[in-house]
Image (cartoon, rainbow, N blue to C red; front, side, top):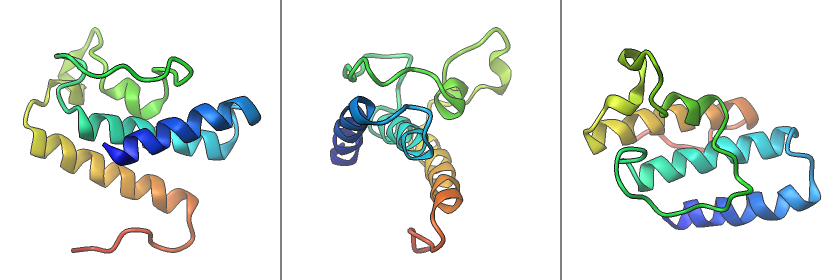
Length: 108
């Protein structure tokens, strides 16, 4: 939850200063939604905390979690919290690897 709030604060601040199409903002936006879903794995099927409206509900990662007309392929159908967090962890590692030369995450 702490990571979620720090990312939200950073995105809102950088949104005022920087174009939201920059790689830094795009990375932070994806990381925010990953942290949000890890903290609120029942999203969008249950109640969840509000986030700052400057952070859009769009982008490759979060759009996968919103139910569509063809819900069979949607991770939004997954209800097991451990499974949801494992999927997010794998995606976060890929996101980090795309933007940083060195591994940010040690394998356990």
